[in-house]
Image (tube, rainbow, N blue to C red; front, side):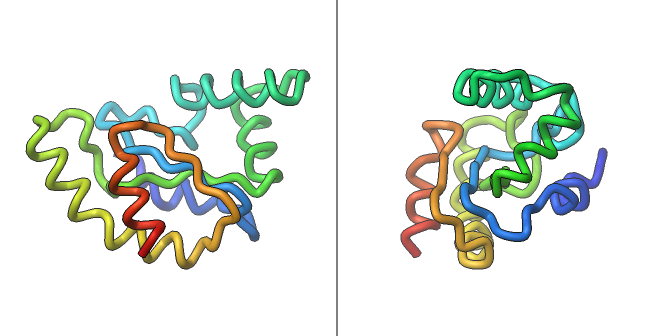
Length: 128
């Protein structure tokens, strides 16, 4: 598996204005910052609709994403999309403290939660 955290850090802007939070790096290895994948395509579609201009290929889009001060992190540091619901819930709960620490470090102006089911965990981490 690709070392997602090393790759993620390559795209960390100096100042994070907007922090997007997903659930976890996918088990299948289709990580946002690794190029063409579903999450990246959907984010690019949304940004292109907002900007009303094409934002290039995956790599150009990732550079644009970074230039806006936008950064994607995940609640849980390891893949959980393949886990049964009870295990997934336990991993989400355990991950809150780490996310709290990262949010303090990032100090974003805004947080965008990308999955409704992680909202309570992210809200608690952000409030802490």
